[in-house]
Image (tube, rainbow, N blue to C red; front, side, top):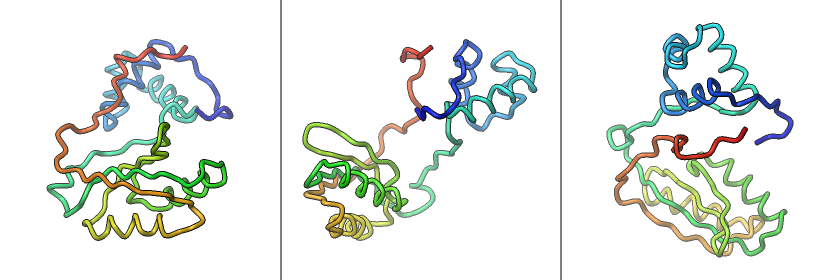
Length: 167
């Protein structure tokens, strides 16, 4: 969490707002207010304050790409030559600039990063990997690509009901 953002007390109502919009972000303010037991005005003010404080960042829609376009999904693992701050920052900036690398997580124990990736086809995925591995400033030692054969479960949000909330 960004330390320069204001902190808001996560009381029961704020937790309920976050848990509700996390799983159903397309609710109208009126519908959200009804679900959390607030007036629309109070609900709007709390939701706005939570967003401005950085407790959530955006709203998005999951799409069924199989019905929309040709694509290839893969997890791409990256191991760097050096784990120095300079190489990590350069690598992270390069990944951030390429939208096909949809997320990127820094790991421990061998593989330095893993990215969930969507490309138009296998050739496009290979070109993306070549672009990253071919830039000596990024210090990529190795890349391992794990093609996704079938998506058997969609990410539908964090299991907030199973996690301990911070106070």
